[in-house]
Length: 140
Image 1 (cartoon, one colour):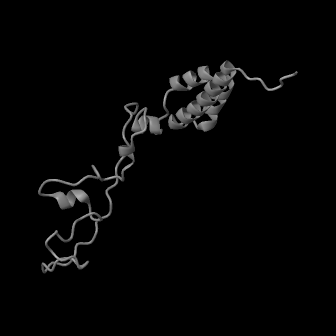
Image 2: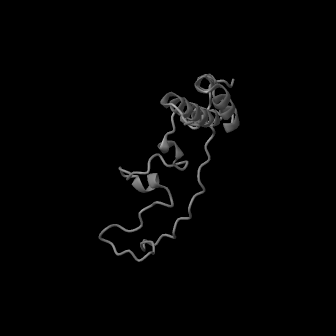
Image 3: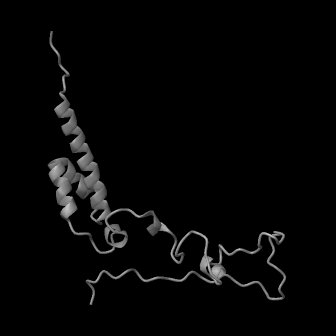
């Protein structure tokens, strides 16, 4: 009797290492600013050694690797100008929340959707502040 499709456990593990290293190298190269194709090339051709090569590549200026750091940080994806998405504390809490997140009515005031009648005209929303990109230290 002939068996045509016998794959040993070692071959299956090597296949998984090859595929995971290709996917990891593609993700890492994209994060470092080189694009997924460079990582796929190294990961598919050189397997786990290619992943190590991509790991040793320096991050390009302006890449997610340089801006957010080596690992993804969900807190780094918050909108510009918001220090945190939690409740603001302090006397200037409404200013810390920004114009779109300010609380208009308190828990004991009726919420009619209109600003409270204080005799002042409603404040116009300010344009969002622009931020400069972070400096990498390479610039003079």
